[in-house]
Length: 147
Image (cartoon, rainbow, N blue to C red; front, side):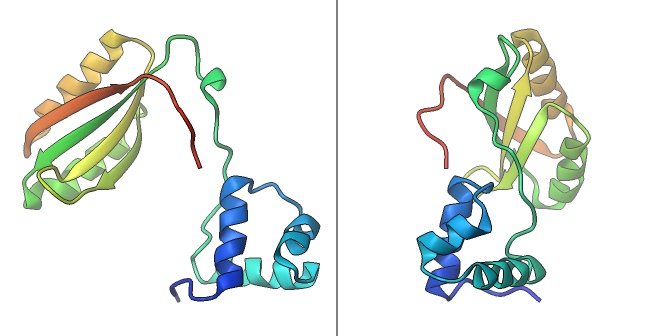
């Protein structure tokens, strides 16, 4: 059963976890001004309710192999072709994330490629998928901050 965040302590807890998901329950409790068991109960409830669906490591630029390129691709696609396109994108390891978007473009896709040649091949592949009308690609140069 999914629900919205309407509790201020839950919102604060989620903000702390987004900054550092490895914080111990004791530290979280201290920062929230609640007991450790209260934090554990909140975490269990947030996981059960589907608000927290996993924990992950966010890798910095130094973790990427030397020369790794990152790009985002805006894709305009026919509405009926969207599910098939998303399914195709899932199968390509260079496609790291895929978001639906409002406005002129329907999807925003994040790509990681080892070279400009590999990126070009992925972009050509995307352009050949049935239903893709238009794409716009931007290379990411540096990360100023990430939350």
